[in-house]
Image (cartoon, rainbow over all chains, first blue to last red; front, side):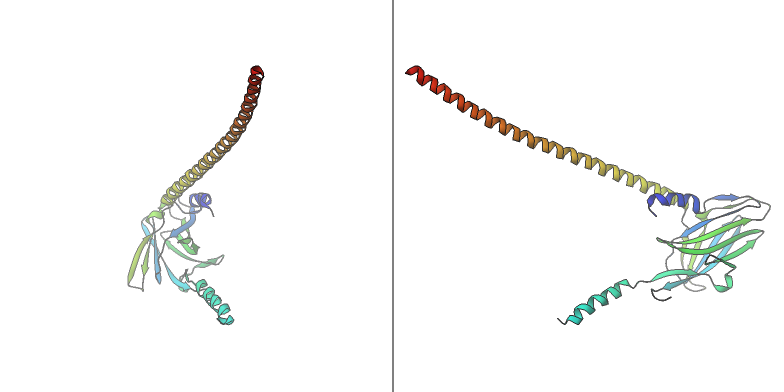
Length: 65
Length: 176
C-alpha cells in the first residue's frame, strides 16, 4: 500500500471512537506496536467493563514451518 | 585461491544474511472460541456486551487484530481505541512493558502531514525542473546569439576590408 492508500484504510477499516447502540455491533482492525514479550494481555474497556484477552508471542525462523 | 572457496564463500554469506527471525502471536488453545479464515478468535461476554478479538497479521511495525463489539444490552456502550492497552509479560507474573493501542485519529493526522510533505516535495521538484529547463533554454539562446554575433562581426569585418580596398583603389586612381 502506498501513502495515499493508508488514509481510507485508517478511516474506514480500523476501529475508531464509536457509540454502539443496543442491538448493534461494530467491528474493525486494531493496531499495537509491540516489542517482544512471551505473554501479551490485551485489555479492552467497553462501557464500564474491562474485557481481557491473552496471546502468546512466538519467534518464527524461516524454514521453521 | 582454490576455486571451490570462490564458490563456497558467497553461498555461505548469502545463506547467513537471509536468515532473520520474525514474531507471531498465538491464541492459547483453551481460549479459542472459534476460527474464522485462519484466525483464532477469543470471545468474552459481560452484561450482554460481547467482545471478540483475534490476531490477524503483522503489518509494517504493528500487530493487527480484528475486534468486534456486539451490544446486546439495553444501554448504548462506547468504545475508544485510544484507551485500549496491552501488558507485556515475561511470564505470568513479571510485567515487562505497558503499551497503548495506536490511536487512529493520531495516525490519520500523521498521514495527513506526510501527504502534505510529499506534495510539497513533488511541487518543489517540478519547480526546480521547470527552472532547470528555462535556464537550459536561456543558455541555448545565449550560445546561438553569440554564434550569430560572431558571424555578423566576421561579415562586417570582411565588408570593411572590401570597402577599405575600394577606397584605397579610388585614392590611388585619383592621385594618378
